[in-house]
Length: 134
Image (cartoon, rainbow, N blue to C red; front, top):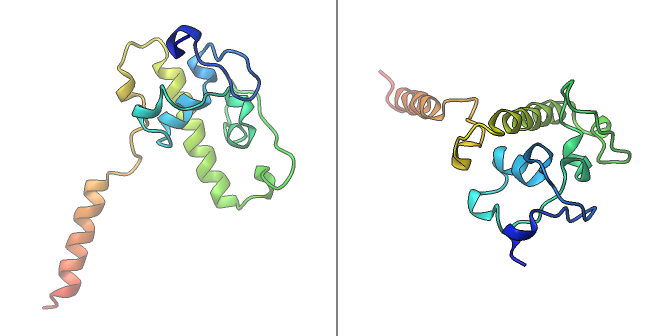
């Protein structure tokens, strides 16, 4: 049976991943870890079946996931935890936002929080000033 006929089956629990808001694959796509070309080729899981990542979703509408052991966020660097919580929560909220919106999948990924062109221009300006003292 073709993958499109069988749907997406969670490689961890073996159950169907029926909703995109429960999809670890689409969450990873939205946050930039999986290219669009891999969506039909990559294994799927429920978000909760990937607890090491799911623990970083911090939102009232998402029941918290607690990871015991060394990969639990309580044992990780505080700054890393903040960054992951920001990124992964934003990614999950983006999935909630695009579900049923009709926008193309290519527009699902998060937009960068930083305008890279501005940073590059500032860096070039800084480099030209430091390399050409008056």
